[in-house]
Length: 559
Image (tube, rainbow, N blue to C red; front, top):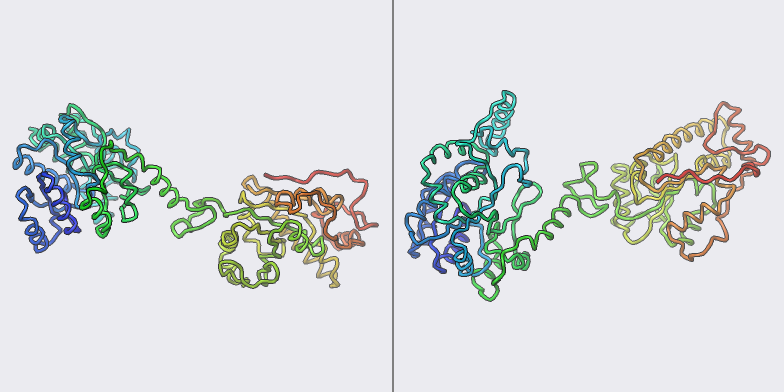
């Protein structure tokens, strides 16, 4: 057992092994102070088959862990001549099945070495970019305590083309450090005439505890099963998963003999597996793959999360989201300008929650004049504009199960347009140029109207370029105002059917359209003043409507 912390739990596990008749050799990290080590050793002094090996300073990724394993193994082989298999474990390991089952399992396989051992070309789990280089380069500096020197030395070796050769041409192998080797294989490794040569080489290898025994066992073993009998799982960053009390049933399903890493305060786990024989597993072949699906789901949830829900670890990184938003919603542009009381009509027909202009400059125009929405989202434009993307995604997330619809136009805050343009959940319907209707009906100075119309047209033109971008993924429909008013029922029916027609029947009545008498002349006046209002389409001056004899055209459609 390699022990460096939670010595109370290590004592409990050591007694469990010893009670089943297994001799135990314990290595305590030299970083543990002498008083703590002495007390730990004294606590186990009543067990005749427990020994303590010479202590080494152990640090992740360095030679000390291999040296500790060597010292403990040498003592085990010297002190206990009847030992047939040596099982390497840590102080955070926990036996999951009766120890006698492990003894019988190994007795049926007296010549089998259980050690994960794969060539560097076949290892898919390394994290950090160092596969073959951990053997061809040297690593005299600690990755954790001397990171700057570590990186400088690695880069210098790469630049100078320095490479080390494997001693005696051995093939490097890698795998879990938690092995179970036969006496013959382990003694052959420790008594090899070239051991000093191998030790000097692997002393400069990065993370040698994952390659020393894994490589040398290939020289001597007659039967290797390339797997560990210890259940150990790692996350996408290469860090080990820690098992807590609520993992009890998960560990039982694995049928493994031993698991790590166990949280020291997981009282329920230690009680279930060390003191309750009826609660342990029996008889099945170890199969950690049975719970791989659970870990795969955990990794996906951690790295991708729920669609439309942003968590701290992913939020600053663009493109890390698992779906832009959590549900479908609709954006209407120009409809509330062209139709009177459009919001109320849409809500009645679809049953959806229909807001006004959520991104209006003055305030957020929630449905029914509300000032606060689900999730404590206020109608403050200041709060909304601090992060418009987060505002919209939060609104959709907090109102899951209810379709949200809102108005948008060139007079609104435009920082949000790329978000819903790239969102597959968005349905965007645009009547281009309809923003001119409120200007037409206003009683303002025409010079001011012309200036504002030019600005709004420029903003909408840029917005339409976003919607027509090849990167847009929303369901987008764009009509010019002239096209739309020729036959409004057909596009309205299509839009309503996509949202969900409450009555599931054909529309018989459209919302009341604004009186456009004289609108064509208004557009002509804008032209006469030097502006070219082209987004509205072609309106006849004499009637204020689009030309009735123009053939009907299908809307511009973007998937």
